[in-house]
Image (tube, rainbow, N blue to C red; front, side, top):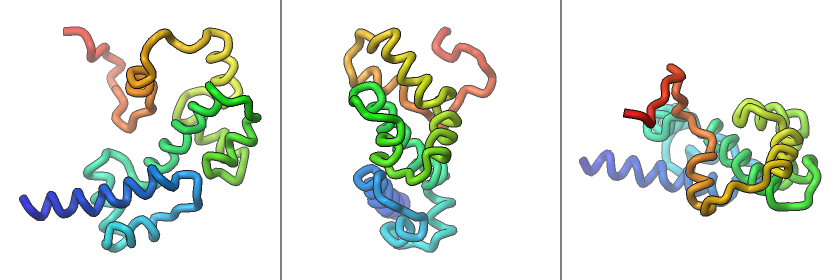
Length: 144
């Protein structure tokens, strides 16, 4: 049991690094070093624990922050792209669309047109956060 707890501590340090420094250039080798493991072991263990690779988690974290900025800040899509750690607008737009299902511009327009949902922010973030654990079957898993 102690081994698992130790492993989670190593993973948590790396995940915390991503959360705190998502807008900076981060690579898997740096994150593996933070965890104290080899690159391959780190990627494998991170994916087993969190359901996605460190690179996918970093991309999702950046896109979550971009969604927040697109909803609340008067910034261009290019400015948002740079603020969340992307250096290429094309890469940012492609990843945003892959993760959310719509382009950054379409996302902003939809949010502006329909306004923010009248729910507390903590619930909004919980339910709108892109997830690595999708429902492949298309069935409604919320009904009994």
